[in-house]
Image 1 (cartoon, one colour):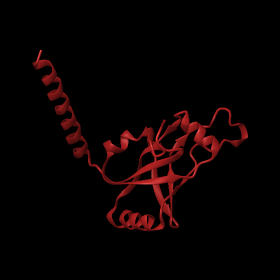
Image 2: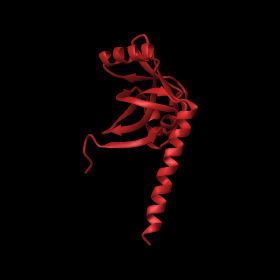
Image 3: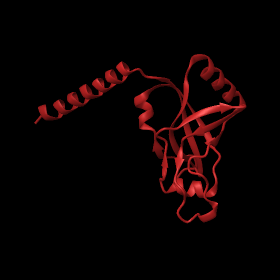
Image 4: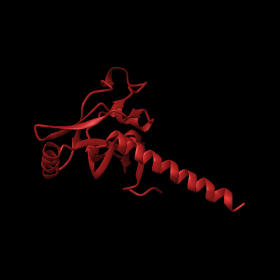
Length: 155
């Protein structure tokens, strides 16, 4: 049997880790319709160019693509519609202050099921410069080379 709060990851936004430094993460619920949830269960969701905006004390995810459910006919929604995130008011106000004052961005990092509910992991992110991206790529390559060398040296 599966635990009630088991976390089943649906998709992650790998591009976000390449383009941003993630300073802090938050969990938020997401307001969806039935056909969207069915489409998410089938894995037909893309977080690649999505971001979150704060408007009127509420948070919305923009650019998250949820493909239309193939058996959904008239109940399907626009795949790129803005989806409302569900967070406590204090958290939203705190995030709003950080985003406006510090120049940070809210980026969806992953989408997952927590029990039967769909949750979004939001990251409070600072953009990387080109030299930061090169540095992190060089570090990853060096780690791969070290790992490869250590595997072959023991044989």
